[in-house]
Length: 259
Image (cartoon, rainbow, N blue to C red):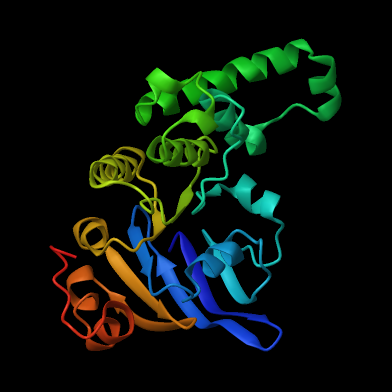
């Protein structure tokens, strides 16, 4: 059974068609790259999966139809995501930013948290232990108490990744995590993505514009153009597909190793 199945997904805003007949499936443990030109509908697809947008069609997560669920219910099922523009709380510490990713795992109620009962104390200790493990996993020990807004952009991106991991997800949506990073920062990000894949065994859907990273890391690639599927398959075949080259990469054939 696929971890996630998207079936005939359509999204329209008035007369504008953003997604048309989008279908794909993500297998357990798979790193599935979703690529395409700016405006192709990639982030809109993420917004439909996480239920920020209400598209038409069917989305199944581990066999369950999630098409009518709320964003909070989808998060509780274990679908976590990062954002293109990080969206951190700049005046909060790195540790506290990552703690916000635990919200869907809270078992105490608002009254208990307001009164700071013993159950709340025990739960907070448990969640802090989980966050510390994530901080170690993505090597943020040296900045755990720093204000997130004061950190370099590349580190902020890793904090955003850590916050998504704090949900203890079953599926991770990565929305252009390498955008704005230097080459060294992209190398670090690639290392963390591979660590998530091999150590945590998490399936990931990965929106990416760095074709070298896609060629090196992705198991399969799905290309969107104007909301429609253009090609889908293994990186070597897809990145040299004539329609992909013409629509996304220009007229010259892509050399994925040097893109």
